[in-house]
Length: 122
Image (cartoon, rainbow, N blue to C red; front, side, top):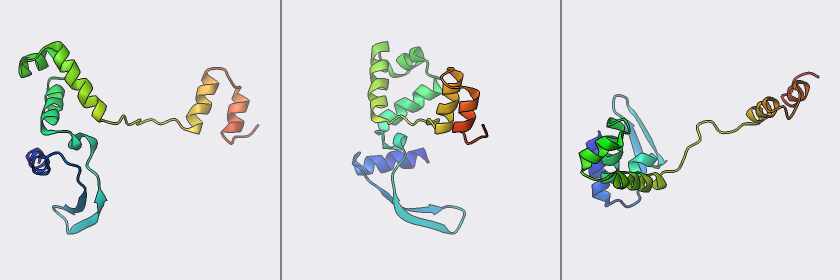
């Protein structure tokens, strides 16, 4: 499957594109619409290979130096360049409930105030 993505990116010459049709292989289901590629898929072939190697080496920069024949600063610069292309996704965005519990933890509010804010009884 990865090879197909590389071919698709080569075919498009790294230009932006949209997926408009998805078919589930083992089922008779087709979904049409406008779907963006996941962020990692939008990286160039070279950057995807670099990230895959980084994961395979468990983030060991010395191994990356040997694998690509480049220096430590070059590995770091390449990772920084790639990371700037990717948007950070907060998997734990703050919620009102979490903020209230955080205030309680910091002794900024009392238990009674926290319960009241959370919709509990006084």
